Length: 600
Image 1 (spheres, rainbow, N blue to C red):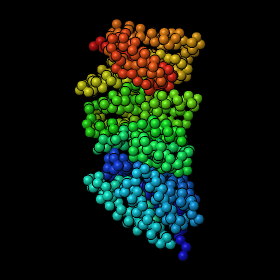
Image 2: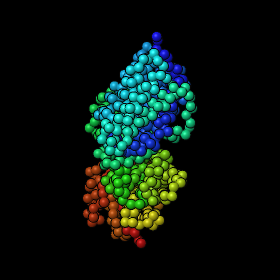
Image 3: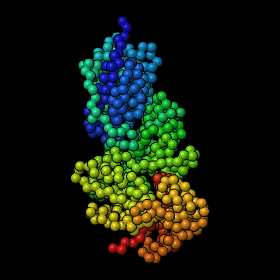
Image 4: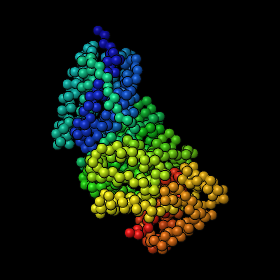
């Protein structure tokens, strides 16, 4: 007898019902997630994949192979986390093997493809571990292929599901961390639940249209629906994921090249697309490598170490948040548990996360190589809302200090997100009227008050009053970026450029860029900056200052030494300028931000 044929409409429904079943159990999957790290996000990661499948399968299909292709494509786009990427690679493996079958819509071909794809699922993982999703996938696929394919899927699938259930229950015994917590593996259960919905669709012949409330506003990787809640300190700081298009290397080559950058490496590749997951201390280097072998489409870099430290022992009852334009050393931010909303940097067709997946030095290398002007945008509303959701479960109040609203829409985005909150946690959004290191010094002031136990209202009042005691002066080598970005008026900028002036740029009281002085050489320019600080120090006393630079460390160091001699004390820190500020200040810029003593 010939093998039965699969009705493509029934197959669409089966994939949709599997996705819906996982979405319904998202919370439970998050709760039992303890391996490979107890980060409580397996359910949310799989939900992203399932949403992508539901969205893609709503589109019209006319054959079994077309349905499987849509699921495979959607899986790569929607996959997140270890289990999600293994899921995606398995579905892509099924598609690849079904593609070479003569009868692409027969039960026999489907069953053969399901079994053959096991190998591809294993190959996605750099170090496969039994007792996880991969074990249940193998058990289900092997059980399905052991039965007579002359039978229909309505008869084959229940038997395979029983074997998958046994394999799932056994995961508790296979891994010590699961046994200790008396749970099954979360990823394995996610796959089992998908197959429960998939199987019941064929057995019961029911067609349930997915409801709209299963869909998030966005599937972008930069949006992290849940935060990591590790119970053990992560070995590597950032959970980094990238969706890559136009990939030029094989999965094995990518795994080998990325292995030195971290652990928990999983790579799924198919039809010129790749989904990469890695825990790393160098998300910028990871993306730098990946951008050479493909076109990054989505990315994220969650700070697992910061989240772990807050969950273990938060330092204060008030959360302090700023954006990545504030130039503050990364060590200070982590040590004081300050949250940073990364700005988005667009270079060519690739979007980067400021100070996470791109640093200012890499920014100049890229823009110089591509001869392409970069643009920036504030964090998305969804990103801000997700951060607030995390903070509201851990803090009594939240203070956000943003870059000057005259320079960016960040203040308005954060303010809008704060308005939508319904919890009792107080949120204050403060326009710093500053940027760069001056904004950083204001954040440091807020942190010192919070750490010393000052109350919420008093911190807010003090910080608002402190804004006019902070200044920044920038020595600009190339005026073009500032003119193009609108940081200084075009008319004044063009005149200064025409007569080859080296201007000093600062901010007015509203936070807008202004030309404050100029010289005919960079050395003359920097002498004037020293004179300005000496004048302020004599009149109001400079409490502290910092030196920052845009790929100009040697000159910045020289200025630092001269300022130290002139003022009699060292700067609080010296560092690279943020990528967004570097974009408008231009390569070669050096800036000094300083804080005057308060009159109160």
